[in-house]
Amino acid sequence: MALDRCGFLMTALLLTACTLPAAYADSLEAALIKAAPNANAKVIALAVRASQCSRTQGTAPAQRLAVIDYSLPSTAQRLWVFDLKQRKLLFHELVAHGRNSGENMARQFSNRNASFATSLGLYRTQSSYVGQNGYSLRMEGLEPGFNDNAFERAIVIHGAPYVSPDLARANGRIGRSLGCPAVRPAIAHQLIDSMKDGQLLFSYYPDQRWLKSSSYINCGNATVADSARPTGKSLNTE
Image (cartoon, rainbow, N blue to C red; front, side, top):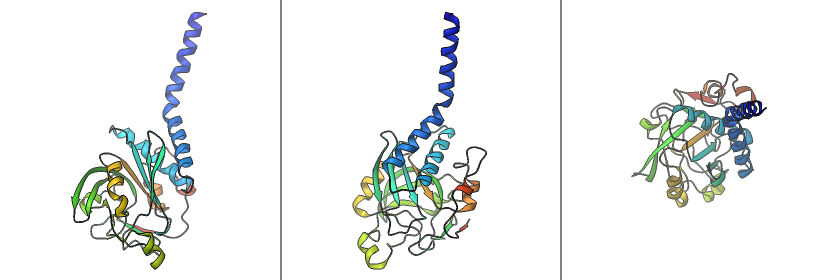
């Protein structure tokens, strides 16, 4: 009887161990959605899926995750930064898109050099530095064909005076970057420090080509394209 009980306990432990990653992702998704009630729950779910998929690369797990929903206008606070360990929201901010991605709404995305457009997909942050835009954060684009030219294009997080609620009210949009996710100068340093050295940024728009081909949001056999239909047309050029 003791052996049967031991065998039962061992089987239960093995089943629990096998389901831990999926259960962890599900509970993390629920916690982040709760922490950011104004965010699109489907976008947060995709970001969590991408972050979990990135762990299979053998790199150290990220401690923070930034999510940008470019389906929202530039006048909306469409950037969320989460602490994944404490499962809480650190920042909810305005963020710029590239000048060739659109006016108030971003609709065109590119991975090409000198496109001055925003790129979609998952990024891993690198080191911070001081450059022509002040304190900035380098990023590595992880998705071939969509954002893997980010480092060469100098797509970085930095502060910019044109990211301002006053400008949003006066002009109907905030200013635009050359493709960088620029933020308000007042919070740039603190936000960059929270995101530097191996954290993740998920740049979202319901672009069908990206949704169908991204290896980070399609870890299983099913794709997510049909469940995340765009509200308008987009153009994603390499």
